[in-house]
Amino acid sequence: LLAALLGEAGGRAGTLAALAQRACAAPGPDHALAARLEAAATTPYSHAERSSALARAAALTPDPPLRSARFAAAAEQAAHAGDPDRARALLARTAAAAETGSGLAPMTAVPGLAPYVHGLLALRSGPAVDAYEALLAAAALLGPHDPGRALHALLGAADAAWVRGDAVGYLEAMGRVDPAPYGDAFASYRAGMCAVLAGRTTEGHALLRRCLDPDGTTEGHSLLRRSLDPDGTCGPAGLLRAGVAALVLGEVAAACRIGARALGAVRAKGPEALLPQALEYLAYAELRAGLHAAARAHALEGLHAARRTGQPNSSVRLHAVLALAASVEGPAEACAAHCDAALAGAVPHGLAQPATLATWARARADLAAGRPEEAAARLGPLVRPGPRQGHFAVRMLAVPCYVEAVVLGGRGGQLHSIIDEFAAWAGRTADPQALAQLARCRALLAPADEADARYAEALAHHDRAGGDFERARTLLLYGQWLRRRRRTREARTPLRDALVAFQRCSARAWAERAGGE
Image 1: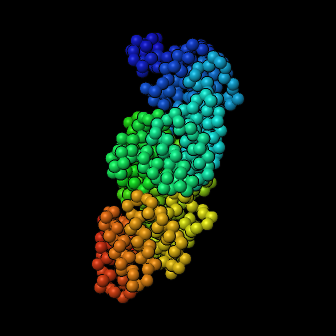
Image 2: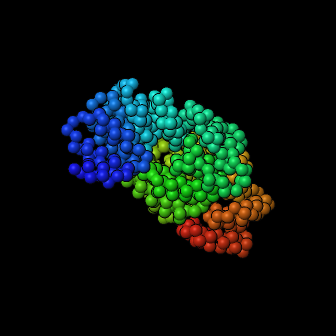
Image 3: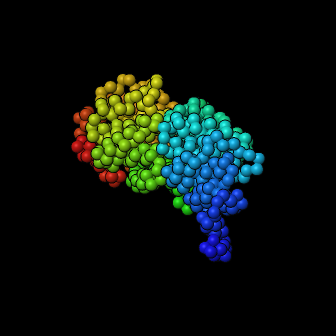
């Protein structure tokens, strides 16, 4: 009776609800009803509704291989809905060795779907190497039958390699992607990211800029109209890739705008499982732009979303972002707590990127507290040439803190090679703070008769770039240098200006250090 009433209500919602009620009342397997349920479980419905419908369809399916495939499809939708426990329960009902017959429905009769879902879940909650291998294997199975899912499996494998700090693995996964069927923007993104990770930075930056800014305006306005979805649509996943490209270029303001748009798209259309990642990417872009309070707010929301949707790896990355924000705003106890939480999850799961970010955050808090030797000891293994324990995307960003820590600790003679490397990076990136940070590093190492000019150069770059926190750090170091030279009267102005700027951006520990000076 209820099924009949819902059917009379009309509309797509009524159709799926009516079929679900008929499924509940079915006395046993019903191939025709299962097929109708599967056909109705399409895009207009939420991922949770689609998962429920596909699970009911699977329960009504008499043929074991098709039943297995439908349970796998239901698990995929549950994963997108942010319900990993349900996804795992549905996968447990999937016969991994089921063979598909010639008459199976095209939506679900796909070899490799269950391994693909296993890989997705591992990417969000397991060791990154497990996710990488599972998604590569799934892509090989999916390729001949479902190129769309195979592509997403390869992109997921590339994400797993990136967070591990495995450039070779990233190139392997992206190298298996055939860009020919997809749009020019996606093809340029793939080629540009591969070129950057292969060490061809100039070529890679040109490709990434072309895919984000095809008109060559370099103003970032077109970035808001571009998406890097393979099918050319403006979905949230493609926007997140566009944000990554902007950050690789150093276009931090554009990355913030793209991240805000991606977050809006996820809030409006889902999938729910993408919300923690959207908040994380936006928060990280805001950190790079010096918007620490906004980054903290978005990262806290992301942490709650990651816990709600069962994504501990997202929680790890968000703790690292929060540690970086706390290394500016304080208190030191919050920075330490977030750092410990990030490392506790990052180390066993092989997540090199959040581990590096968290270590950098702890070192920056050490600098704020006047402990340069401890900061140098933390950062040295991450940034020095040779075998590295850090992440390739973070290494250059941490160099200015390392240089400051080493110089203040009295060991400045070992830095020239790393500053030369940083200078090469600063010449390529569009990051607005890079040139100011380079001049500050050179000022720290300059002989007494050159230091004033170097600090003046750094402050001139800061004036063009904006950003209170980095400018205040340069003022603080300049004031300290003047005081050590017994030029006390001259030191008062930069130290006072540093104190005011730190107070303005709520950098409490740094303000205390400036006040002490």
